[in-house]
Amino acid sequence: MNWVKIMNNKYFNILASIILLLIIIPIEYLSYKYINSYMVMAKEITFSASIFIAFLSIPLLIYALLSGLIYLVSGWRFKYDSLICRCLLIISVISVILSLPISFYVTYKLKQDNYVACDRISWMSPNNFVKPPAVCN
Image (tube, rainbow, N blue to C red; front, side, top):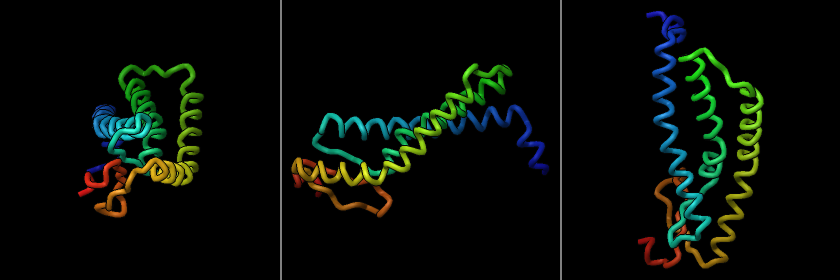
């Protein structure tokens, strides 16, 4: 099987872009939901540095996949495609740099507002903060 031929196949690239979009969009929805719970100060807040990175970086992936998909289907490119990608890339890099300090600030702020951090299932899982401590159990 010749992988170069498969990767250069237009229909394979379209299918791969659609599959990646179907994977990425729910992740963006979840990160939006977690950020929104922090903004409205819900009784249960889920937050970590990875959620912040995903919230600001996934628009770059979605735009790149959609513009690539449109180019594959129609052969047409957006007028300011490289400028938009450059701006989204800068936002993504800034989100990676600022994610750790913002995560520390959010943890500090929530503890000041009497939220309790629940035990994590694994070291990769995001922090869960709750207002009544009994909810953790």
